[in-house]
Length: 51
Image (cartoon, rainbow, N blue to C red; front, side, top):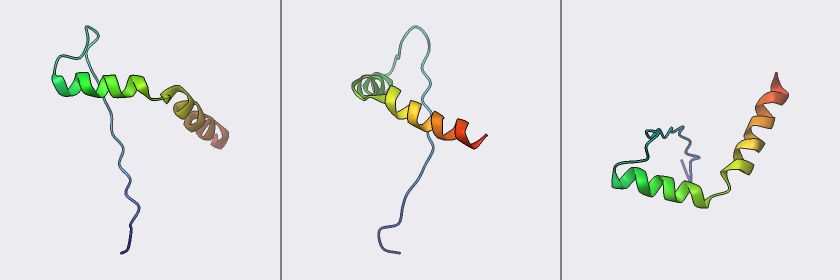
């Protein structure tokens, strides 16, 4: 295969007091810089149209 498409679903869970580990803090910091609201709104509209 040449340039196969790779897909993986991931989840991120941290406790409500805040991320404790350095990796969790880095992931939260990166996620806060992205426009995830727009991304998830687009994904959810696609799901709700299928129903």
